[in-house]
Length: 356
Image (cartoon, rainbow, N blue to C red; front, side):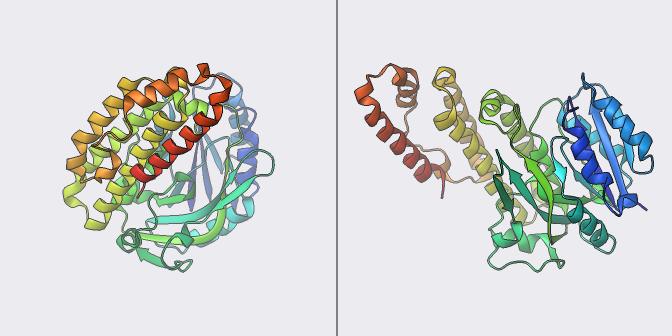
């Protein structure tokens, strides 16, 4: 019996895919793994590399070759073939800590929870490393290995959102809810970290640092330069989450509904931050920010979102932001200090207006 299916979306990752797969097949209990490498129409040698692993580890690795359909389509293809009792996603430029993976496999044999949350590392340039521990975000640390009702954890209010790197789901749960990720766009890992939470009854935290999240790669989707070009995709994912919430809100407990509102607010704050603080001046279009304001105003009452999220008093006027973005690089050098102070003021206003 396979305890864990690992779906690996792969597109042009020939340089990093071996490290990813080596971290899995090296596990002492690899026979309990169901590794699904979903090749999303790669144009490099990724498929060939994956097939080499399949030939060497036929009872562990399976390759699924498909036309390019972007991230969500690879998850959907993997779920169709998943044989494990639980399922986890691993991006092909990342890897698992092999020792932690072995312990996860051991604990999954007897665990009975819809959601399993483990630690993960964010790895930056050089040796920079930050370990994200969800267990410490509550009023009191949750007991590792103990199963809790999901509503009790969400009611705690400290875990405002989950990230896909920490999550393992019971495979039968995803099939019961007919989970399907949006295809054709990136950033749909947000759906993976949100939609199943609506339906999971139980959750368990394990003291294992399994996922090693590589942030030090050119072209990485969370890199600022990539984010700037991906705003339409981020908005589409937000729209999908809102649509799912509206369609299912009647069946949600108060704890899950409140958590989703909070989660959606956080997603919108990210978009506002990109527009107001991160976007290059040459790319800034005030009409885009105005459109975002209009959209949020329309759905704000429906979700019961905080008025702090979109200031009715226009304290951050679009015209001012537009002028600043367009003309800052033309200012005389002696005004640089003033510009720096203005930067501080805008960020201070952002924190006061968009964060509770």
